[in-house]
Amino acid sequence: MKKTIERFIRRARRVIVISHVAPDGDAIGSLLGLGRALRWLGKEYTLACADPVPKGFAYLPGSETIVQPPPSGWPKGKYDLVISLDCGDLKRLGTAYDESLAGLPIINIDHHVTNTHFGTVNWVDTEAASTAEMVLELVESLGIPLDADMALCLLHGIVTDTRGFRTPNTGPRTMRAALKLMEAGAKLAEITDRVFNRRPLSAICLWAKALNGVQLDGRIIWSQITRAMRRECAFSENGDAGLVSFLATADEADVAIVFAEKSDGRIEVGMRAVPGIDVSAVALDLGGGGHPQAAGCTLDGSLDEVREKVLAAVKGAMKGRIH
Ligand code: AMP
Ligand code: MN
Ligand code: MN
View 1 (spheres, rainbow, N blue to C red):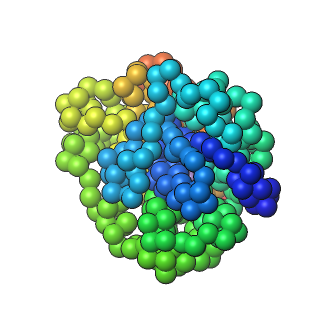
View 2 (cartoon, helix red, strand yellow; view 1 turned 60 degrees about the vertical axis):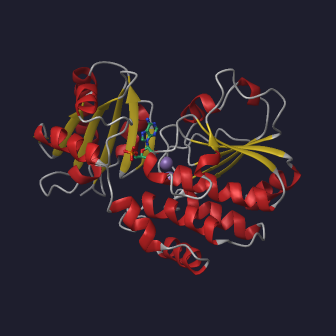
């Protein structure tokens, strides 16, 4: 698989690399890591994402080179290869994948169990804890030397997706990748400090409001974030500011869910589950995706409607729980 991907990359001249909407640390880290590899190979390339880079990731070298698609779409005929990173389905590339790219070969590099294999070449490794560690393996197999900046971006991807090496899919392979990246100059302490020890006051304000409304329904803990809360806290980004992972720490719960109203009125649903319960199946049924222990989807409807629908689906999935 890697060899086929290598061939496509070596032959390509102008590459567009895209990661998913509402990018997380793995999406951005993988994008920047692969971008540096393409630069080393002397390729012309664009790093793209439908949504802007979250402010907390702006410290990554090259983050300012990630572009959003122009309103009129990408120039026709500009690219000859599309690489999709950390993205389970084509729809999740959002407006960054437009009709000007249709017909081009797509290399799909990802680690979600819900991946739809939408690419021309699909390298979907569900054992990988992050797409960033897959990008590292590709970079190595291309014979590209690691530099400290590339290593920082890729380690940032690993650290964010494993929540600091704490997820159950963190294994020797992940640790080996992290070791190599640290040896190449990536500063683990800098990443963990930025990712886990810093947040804007507006996020704390949002947590305060959302925590106030936390509910426990059987072994499901849930809360919601409204547009009014975002406004009152001057929290300008979408997303849940990491709240769902915090709710998942409740002893009394096996599943944590945050329903977050986005600026466009749609509801982003973030879910976490203990091993033995698969929330990626629930998310997939609802048009989203993810991993067994961390998944999500975006739904139309009011907060109340979406909540009832998702809670019913999660309760259904919990009935089939393997003890
Ligand atoms: P999050 O709760 O945003 O941290 O997302 C957890 C996991 O679910 C990530 O691996 C995402 O790729 C996936 N995910 C989250 N939201 C969606 C969505 N709307 N559609 C597909 N996958 C999603
Ligand atoms: Mn991601
Ligand atoms: Mn990922």
